Length: 132
Image 1 (cartoon, one colour):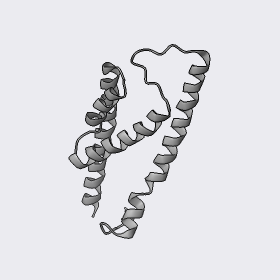
Image 2 (cartoon, rainbow, N blue to C red):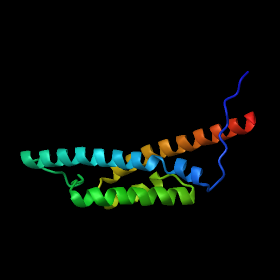
Image 3 (tube, one colour):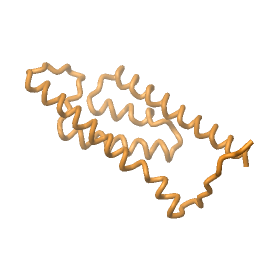
Image 4 (cartoon, rainbow, N blue to C red):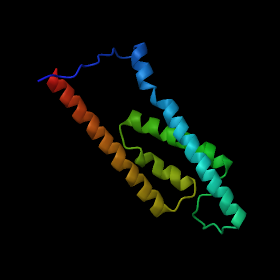
């Protein structure tokens, strides 16, 4: 049985940081693309005279800057504290004016994915350690 090659990287080496930060341009591109789409939808709603609900988030230019910053800060805090990002992003969504029920559902949905990805990381780590 042939095993795949294991890539060994020293922590905090140049290669480590290149691989670690490789996702940033992709994340920024996705954020930009989604914000353009939401902005177009907002402009369309304004043009047809859409009547916003009290709890609707009005996606203006200020929100497009604040929301990614809030998300980044909540992700860093969640990583540093070892908790799911949904625990932090929930109150931030409330501050943006989102309905409490929608905010709770969104943060719980996010916790599902963060906890699943953490579980997968642990499984991969254990499999790598068993094969070495």
